[in-house]
Length: 291
Image 1 (tube, rainbow, N blue to C red):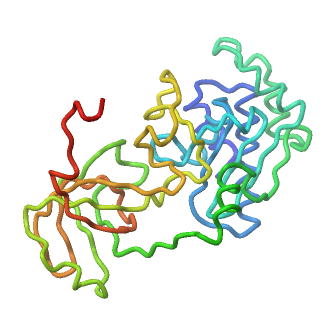
Image 2: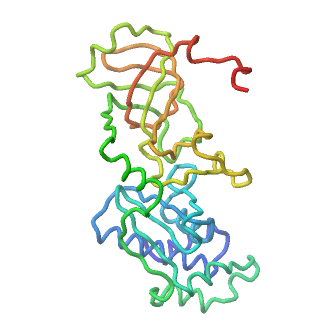
Image 3: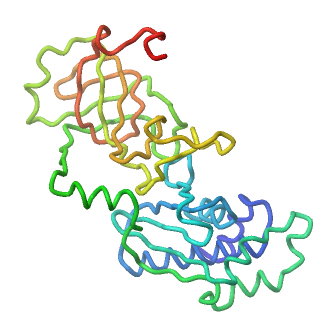
């Protein structure tokens, strides 16, 4: 991506060109170069400690947003660190002293272009005085501690099939449900279909395969920063320790190994982990029972 185009995209999202946004553009460019040099492929996911112009640059240049699950805010990282993950590998960007100072100063729109010299220096000069970018293992945190204490008892799940849905990653709004979707099941498991009936309700367990790894354990409900953060087990967020989704669907018809269903909220391509019948007497409660 040409430098001018990268800057233009970031400005469209952020609203103006300032030193902090220029820093974000340069930082994201360095991260992409590092990822490419290491030979990694796939969608980058971004984890930042705070919302800042650096995050705006990452959204504009990398397409990582809260809505598509490729951006997460983890306050434990602090304001000077960002993680960019690609598969099982992370690239860490660490601001130096001058970079930290620049990101704290984001002028109003009216004065944003006053310091063009500083912006030009950031975009064209040596970035090593502003930040460092390096390949890194995933940052030590609850995920690594969980792996360390439970590695020998790890549970391996094999997909029983995959979801085929009009809901696409990065396009579907949160909590959207497909009027029509298909569960394509593995031929080796055909015997498990015996007894399923059209019109019945099914509970489908699937993997949030596009969710952000290393997501914080406390998040703002539906990404709304005006609402106080809550623990992930009190939320329906897809960014969870084990990334398992559950939804109830209606079985429309069966065609061989393809279950046509209504109401699936999994993205297209999501691995299906299990299917169970929905039993009203066991799976539903009167409102008073939840008090």
